[in-house]
Structures are given as C-alpha cells and as structure tokens.
Length: 68
Image 1 (tube, rainbow, N blue to C red):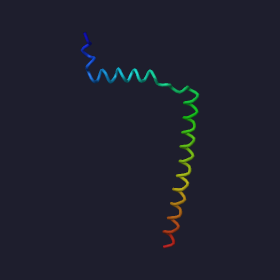
Image 2: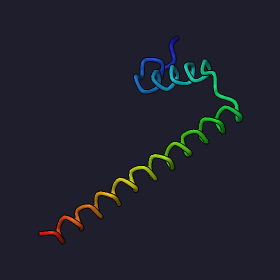
Image 3: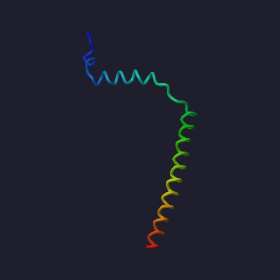
Image 4: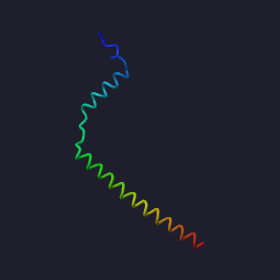
C-alpha cells in the first residue's frame, strides 16, 4: 500500500530536492575564501573607481556652474 503522502505534490518536491542536494559537490573552505576575497576586492576597487568618477564629475559641474 502506498503511503498517503507519496502523491502529495509538496512532499514529492521536498523529497526530490533532498535527493538533488545530496548530489551537489560543495566547494571547500579554501575555495570559498578565495572566491569571497576576489569578490570583496573587486567590489572595493569598483567602488573607488565609481566614487572617483562621481567626485570628478561633481567638481566639473561646480566649475561649470560658477562660470555661468
């Protein structure tokens, strides 16, 4: 006799999700640290570049406004 939950769509979804999660190859701590460091450094560099461009354009606009 089948379990009464076996036909339940939600139950089947979670059962299949657990099966798929067992197949996942998780990264090592070293890999996670390396990739996280890369992302953080990239974020800082891009923030500095965008900040510099923003500051430069703001100063340019101030100069142009003062000329008028």
